[in-house]
Image 1 (tube, rainbow, N blue to C red):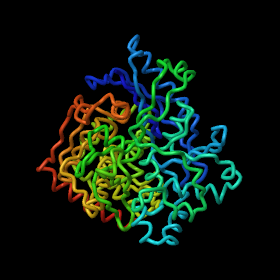
Image 2 (image 1 turned 60 degrees about the horizontal axis):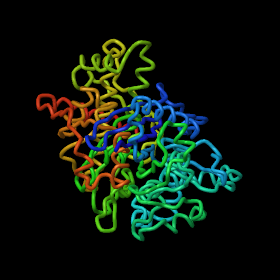
Image 3 (image 1 turned 90 degrees about the vertical axis):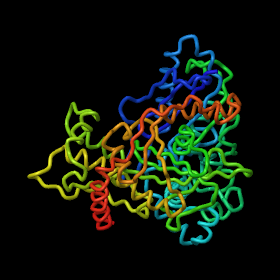
Image 4 (image 1 turned 180 degrees about the vertical axis):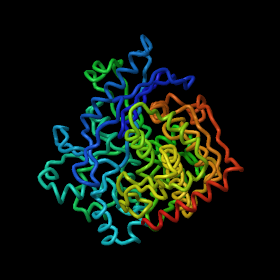
Length: 493
């Protein structure tokens, strides 16, 4: 059987089709070729049009199907991964009422802060394991107060992946994991939090019915299957936010295992079987995709909004013609520490690990007489790696101590400079694998449909393609540079 995976990001929508038996990727495509527009009407705002997601998803899937030829008839199940924490609101006709408020939008921070104060730390950390923060529930509270006419017409709210599934199947569901990522879930009572819903004045009917991440979640509508070039009768059998799904794609399912990504944003995601939380809510705990009453699995997530977006911003302003490979080659000409230049990569909205402060990015230690673009390229990659180390120090306080970082061979992890900096500053080996979010969603579909009988079978085709070990000669230089970077960060915040 062939398996289709769809990965809805904030930059693009990617689709992949894997051979369930071998695990090999047979087709892959993404759209658009340039980054999707993020609408920022005001500072700190970030919205996207869900219709744009749908349009690009169709293009990506059709692109994949065109690569398969007659084998498209073998596709048996579909899985969806999606950008977390977004808010989509639809009316009774399933029409979108406003642009989606996406993950990096920070307008809801005051609403989450007030909820934390009013509900109390003890309630929030015991029941929600998080501050309401800038998550989906607080985004909905913003809509309720600032757009009451729209709020009054909402039939259901959903996460971005729920929206794509609705368009595919005509049915509205969410997952238990998804409810926890929106901060609607009560971990202590194992149900939707009545305390939070009552506080914000939300009716329970606003939330979709929920299903496990691995489950039958609706059949793709015949008209949609025909439009996409898919055979009829395919079910959606898996759904998860991008970071739990990334962990799944790397076979990170058990306590002590850790996954990382470094695309537009950067994430480290560790699995635990204990209800752990950071008292300051700088890292966040959600239900993992394989959580069950019998075997609890929770994901502790460190999210850094400003990581790879810094590198892409530098590429845009550096002038026409420069590639990421060219930037990496120039960065490699400079020694660790970037000759005293430090870059704080926090220019993509409020950062949870900085107490939900929107500090903006900063270039520090720059000398017009000594430094060139190569120093900026290296300082950017080091700054991203150093922000990971800073966040890992916070995660250590919750009991997550990685001895190995697993990641897909993509985005910032394609850069030797970044991998070396991260490995050296954390003292941790990095293993890269031949997978990504769309391939992970395809494997998830295989598990949810029952095609795979065990996790071992699902990940038999997962291969290590590159290993980076800490360079003992350079570790001291990186740690010295990190100490300088951290001092500059503390002065900024």
